[in-house]
Image: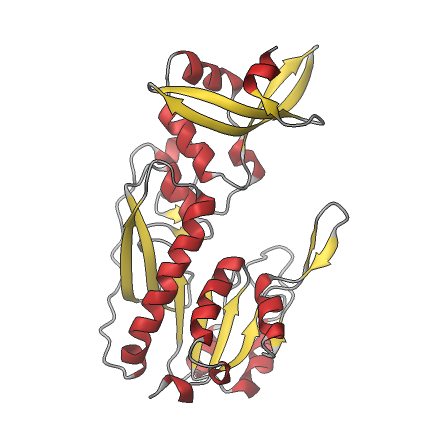
Length: 314
């Protein structure tokens, strides 16, 4: 089947999702029947409701946009799954495409599409299934990462692998740098394999469980090492004494550098210090390694402006 004859519903929410959408748009918007994205969320100092990048992109290209409220206790699920199924049925999708969406697409919707669904996932599955695969790959010291095109399945990131592409993780890579790089790679790979997938000549590969990485579970309570749980603000905390050891002796400097790069831009690396018997939060804004020791370049004390670490010490 030619792509122009394929009715597609796209699921995505982030700026990385738009990278995939842009690539798909090169074939003409007619095949994009609808875009499904997460509802607008409060953003900025005043908490104004802000639509997702996918919402804005789709509307600017005259593509219908649908959003559905999530379950308050389990935000990765819908408040009412049957409502989603019923709303999407009239679009009569041949294929579903998901990229950085964040909610579980109903199994009934996947099964009703002639070609099922495909997901663009920024890791070398089965390593790092879950919500935050890129920071966990950096945190664990992985030498490489990549992108996987896989079928949508009943469970997150457990479908059959259609294609993969590997890239190295460089010592200067951050999550901010890697995410767009991986989704650009994934978008190119996706449009390359799609014609073969639609012709049903592609050989799908079941996932084989990966081996845990020693030490990762002790450093970061993530369950199993191949599951990239969603990061929280507390993940950014690093005890001040650990930072001082890394600065003066180099102890765990590599680990802290990885943590800084992995948690950029959120939740960031931070610590707490005592100033006049009051515990204050200190954000680490810039750092680097020098002769195996940690060098802090720029910090920000809570309620203060960013400053150089030297100035902070003075």
